[in-house]
Amino acid sequence: METSDNALGGAYAGDDKIKIKLVDLLNFYIDPTVDSIAQAESVIERIVITITDFHQLAKDNGWQNTDIEGKRQVARYDTTSNPGYITNSDIFYVEIYRRRGLAPEYLFTGNPQDTKLIATEIICSGTGGNWMFHNISKRKDNRKKGYEEAQLNRVHGRWYGEGIAERLIQKQTTLMLFLTFG
Image 1 (cartoon, helix red, strand yellow):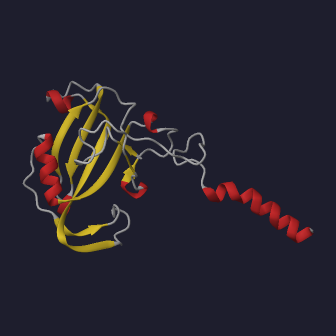
Image 2 (image 1 turned 180 degrees about the vertical axis):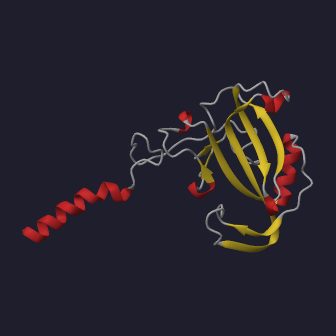
Image 3 (image 1 turned 90 degrees about the horizontal axis):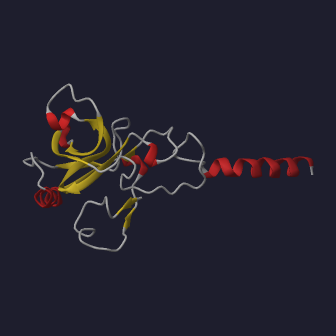
């Protein structure tokens, strides 16, 4: 889930109420071996918005390199590993990638000697196969990334936690033994 601190869009701006936007896991990247988002080095979210919304966000947030074209064929989720599920539209869309996490300080100083890792937020778009960086900024810390977790049951070393099927396997086994051997 994305919290109001993190949400892109005018519906969340300037509002002192907590608002939640569910984030599709097919568009969310995290090291799956960490126990929580706070422990992850970084998280990346893919956000698909209209070209009009992109230009408004860029204007509101002072982004650079905003002269981009959207595309009409948009994947419902990131199709790097599976090129299926493309949606055709008459509206132009932009794929934005937001990375919150550690990055070397030389991204700000330009000095290759500055290799200290600091908390950052990087906004870029990858529409049409061309990557454009729009914003890079420093964050206060790397623990709070603007997302909250909602796992069914936590499992050490597995961010996704325990799945529903794993919870049911013992009950199914017991039921099958009871039905088989009475």
